[in-house]
Amino acid sequence: MTTVSTEPEPGTAAPSRRLLVVELLIVLGLSLGASGVSALISFLGSLTQPIALGHQVAMLNGSHAPGRPWLDLVWQVYYVLRGLMPVALVGYLLVREGSSLRQLGFDLRHKLGDLGRGAAVAAAIGGSGLLLYLGSQAVGANLTVAPSGLPDVWWRIPVLVASAWQNAILEEVIVVGYLLRRLGRLDWGLPAMIAASAVLRGSYHLYQGLGGLIGNTVMGVVFCLLYRRWGRVMPLVVAHALIDTVAFVGYALLAGHVSWLPTA
Picture 1 (cartoon, helix red, strand yellow):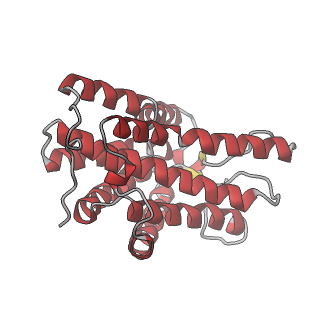
Picture 2 (cartoon, rainbow, N blue to C red; picture 1 turned 60 degrees about the vertical axis):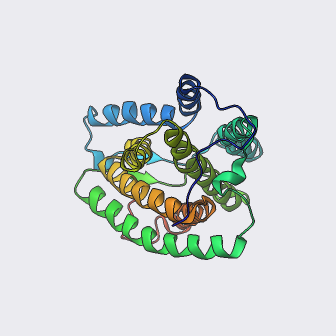
């Protein structure tokens, strides 16, 4: 098993425990921790609707300027780039302590290996995740997830792919690489670190319903164990990006054409 370093580079001053806690809260408060709170509020709103969960819709990639495709494209690019800013912040913080994102395995040193591992993980998790979603939606425990509400224009597929990669980079760098590194520096045990990462991942998917919460929490446990084994987030980024790309693009192409896929 690969050992994942949680210590600062030699010759650099280690931030105090209090500063590490504050830093962690700020990073999560600007990114996926805030998304978890938003998802909880959204889920409570869905529960209090007079409509059953299975008949409500969670839109993932919607239009920001309906009827104005060029302006819509500008908005889509803006949101993709803005979504990567917390990763840039984490990279900056790591450089300040004498490290880098490379320490988390976020680089292109092992392209073929990362691609192969990521594809294998995506194949294993993607199918079971789809079955869990279809089952939870059928029994009314999940909203109908609409991965794409974009207009049928030339940039729809590229934007969906970009959105998938943005989600993957943001989540795996922060929820796995950065969070485990910081919790390790705070002397958390491995089970507690994995539980925190997995619960956080599940929390910001709660807006989809209980299926989204449970499925992503389990995925979070698996991803943490794989990160501890490989010492790299890149295979996880690849796996996540492939899963989301298939979901986003597949929905855009199949919605309304197959009977088994719930649509908005």
